[in-house]
Figure (tube, rainbow, N blue to C red):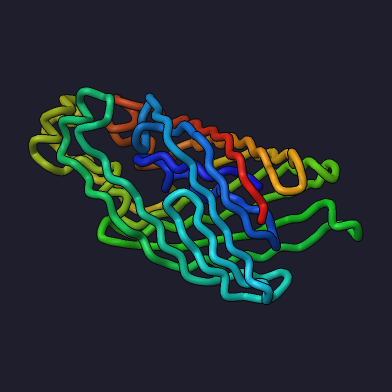
Length: 260
């Protein structure tokens, strides 16, 4: 199991790094740290909820942070189904004195679908490759994630996963979170010389994640996770990031889970 970062203003950035044990039902809670908002140089901590209910036919319901999904497939290798994620907005509670004065971004529910394929690399099934993707959208635009994860069973009690991925978004989504179009917002950034910053569609960033799970007993798991994201293109060039924040985004978390 990797980690879910349920940070109120940043958890949606890192949902691609969330994992859960296969073929079991779990409930867990932890703490995590993530950027104050997308592109922020400062961070915040928050709770990390995890819940999964496994049905006998292989389907399952999964809650990771603020993202819920329902796997409709009973196939050993394929998983697919609907998903919904709540992405928190950006308001006056952020730490940066300039960004907090900008017109706020409302929180939004993003609904969509996910698809994943898994295959083992050896007969003992100690190593595995997962390919996954999802796309979801709401009032603030649409966003998609693509990911490849390598999993290795180090021992009966230890498991590690390493993932690489990318995030893509449409014009509306990028403009919502990285654009500067309102006259009062433009005035906060003298470098714009009175012109708006239009954040176009494309690759928002690339990311690398590392997760380690330690079985403490038959029923208890302790998981540690780290994730680094490099913002690219408009997400990196926006004054929200380049002047008030950083394009290097770091996240981490620890979760204690109970298997039932």
